[in-house]
Each structure stands twice: as structure tokens, then as C-alpha cells.
Amino acid sequence: SADSATTLKAYDATLEITSLDGIRILPYGEFNLGPGKVDLREGEILTGIRIPKESYENVSGHYIKYAMRKAMDIATLGCSANVKLSQDKQTIEQLRIAFGVAAPIPIRSATAEANAKGHTLDQTLLDVVAEGALCDVNPRTSWRAGKEFRLQLVQELARRATKQAVEKAGGTING
Image 1 (cartoon, rainbow, N blue to C red):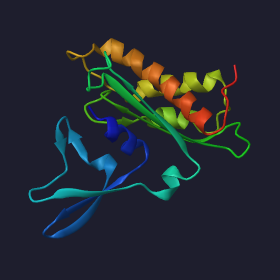
Image 2 (image 1 turned 90 degrees about the vertical axis):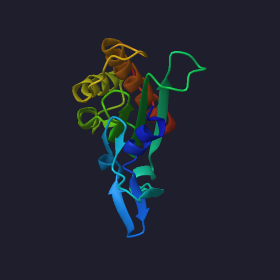
Image 3 (image 1 turned 180 degrees about the horizontal axis):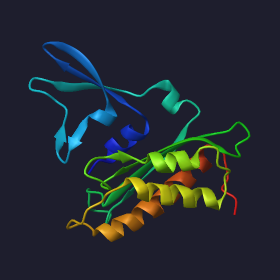
Image 4 (image 1 turned 120 degrees about the horizontal axis):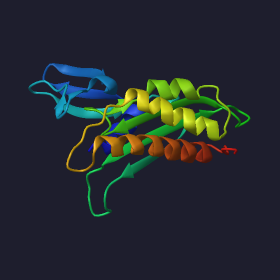
């Protein structure tokens, strides 16, 4: 249920796809075409995943998978947050946050990312990230969870993953 896809999305990964005709490089953001559909043509195979240096250098991340029970491999929702803090560790220079099972395909939240840029490390940061995430997701009801519950999870996992990523980067959420 898109565990690795969510993190690849947050890291701006590119994919190396090989066929008899050669190799093509595809941004991960263009790989998922719809539920269960990816941009692999006949005779192609995924042969590599590349994460650009600027996506991980001086960046700390955290992934949270929510499932109804530990024995279940399929996520109800997943969230990957990567942060780059200012040198004094007081503000967000960059946030990349992505969700799995919150839309038909793994999705980044451009609104949450924009809301976080330049924001000081306080409780309000977590609120603006959580609210921003709601603007970009479109979860559905399934046998695993209803849409309303998933929307609640989007907000909660956005807060928790962002907070954990900030702490891993050496920052502290005040308030």
C-alpha cells in the first residue's frame, strides 16, 4: 500500500527504466498513473532508483505507517516527512511531505510544504502542516477505513512525522 512509494515521492526520486531500446529516466512523480497503474511500457523493467543528493544531504526524515493491527501488512495510511532546518535549527528551510493511501496515487502536499517554509519550530508549524495536507489529499472509503477517518489520520500523521523529522534533524518543537 505504497510504503516505499511515499518515501520515494518525498525524496524526489527518479527511476531508471530499462528495455531493449535503452534506458529512460523518469521522475518518480510521473510513475504512478492511477490506482494499480504505472508508467512501464511493454518490455520495460525498473532497474534503478536514484535519489538526488540535495534531497538527502542535511535532511532528516521520518516515516509513519498506520495499520489497523500490527499483523496487517497493508497500511490504512502512510506519511513520509523530510525536513531541512536552518543552520541555527530554529526554522524550516524545506519540508517534503508525502502520503500513501490518501489519494488514488501516492501524493506530496505542496500546500503543507509551502506553509512550512521559513516557519519557526513551534506548535503552530505542526498545525499549518496538518491543515495544508488536507488541501491536497483525496482519500476514499475502503474496507480498511472510511474517508473521514483517513482525513483525521492525514492530519495526525502529518503532525507526528514532521515533529519526528524535526527532532531527528536536531530541532525542537516549542510550545
